[in-house]
Image (cartoon, rainbow, N blue to C red):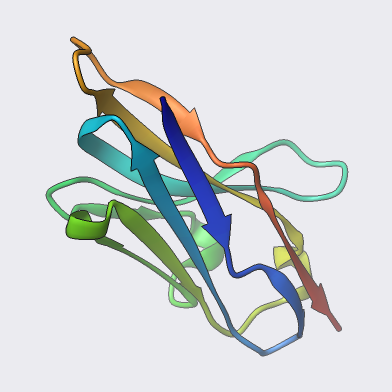
Length: 121
């Protein structure tokens, strides 16, 4: 069993910063890509940022230059540093990871429970 647990969401004023964390735990053999998605009110879930096990990074155009994704492979943890937050960043943020569990032959996508980020203008 693999779990992803997020932390770090909250309420912040526009222009402020927040740092999200997501720790994977359980019977983990290896983790491929890890990333963050978000779903705003009345919107579809969208990819925000992703990072491979080798460190290759992708960002959504809307967050480039403001958000930074990183990971600590020793801790099976991915982070999202969010700066210069805007009201349109308000959403539930979900962590995602492609995890090869112990004894498994392939990676399976796991999701965190989500953490609310609210940016007040």
